[in-house]
Image (cartoon, rainbow, N blue to C red; front, side, top):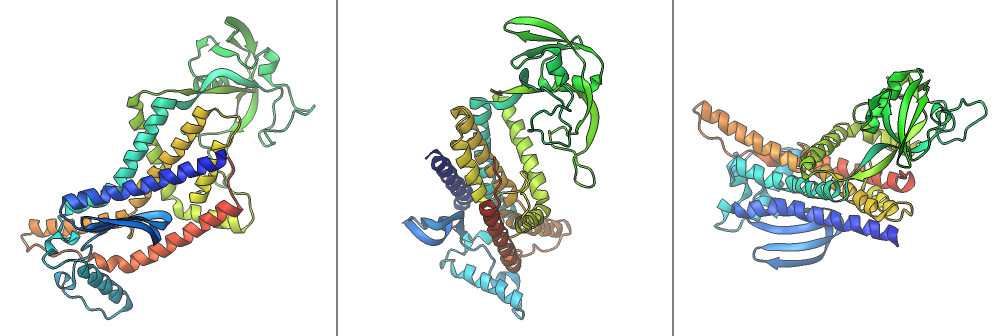
Length: 436
């Protein structure tokens, strides 16, 4: 039951996010006088609709997106010089212009979208993605301020009994041939809080690990707090090969894709993790960091799709960092909601974080400058505005509207590619899923 609840929460918030995304387009369009004939959440057959004023509001059967129909998206033939329709691609563009012109009611040509100035077009087209960013900001704010973010502390959760080689399964049990872990040999216990190491006060787990790795195999004094009392011990780390990580905590890989290792001091201890509430002032930084990481993923999307296809149809184990689709996100939500060894606060925080990342993904992905994505319309508006500014600076007549219908064949191609990627994600999430 809890699994189903988690899935339903994600579906409900996803639909809400889609609906608010379209509101972000619709509200400024109406404010600028553009007639909005339809506001729909979903695609395919209409399940429910109601007309209020001049707009039909409704829900459709496939909840994988939504749209608002802005009247006059494409300039009519006469406004763009009556271009010939002597090729298949040009006929597609002409048909799009004709269909757009048919939606304009008599006497309402001035209300067509193509008449808007470039700044107003940008406000309308960016309104949807920005709405997703606002949603993510709110969700991450609730997580950071209300629940807190996972933070490692210098309180020990586990103390290893032995040193397991870096190329062995880290979850295997100790073997007689494995050397004893120096932390356990020195008398460290789970629950100890490290107060100082090498005579230097310890404030964070990151500070402690940096100090241990730099110690090498030198005997070093360590002070821990145990049962309210400070206990002084001496540890002698062993030098072991351990993985290298960058500043964001991601593994550093060599040219062959294998994680790099280096010889560092090692004690065999691990930190405790607590949920630490953040100041509201920290939320913009959290949103910015999450957005940048999402941009990095989207920038490598083509290669990630190729890797996913090779993994899925090659019957290989799927990388935990692989991209996922709606089915995968629903699976994550169900697994989180049904986990028995996790507190309700962490469950709620994790679900909200997933939904926040989903909205940031929608924000970033929709800004890709390709039609039919919002970024494609933004690029067309910027091109149109740039042409007009160049003409003004050169003292030439103001050029007419940009024939954005020329991009319709490209929009169809992008739509087909996105559909294929979507089907691949569904197949992979069902038959080769990532488990958390």
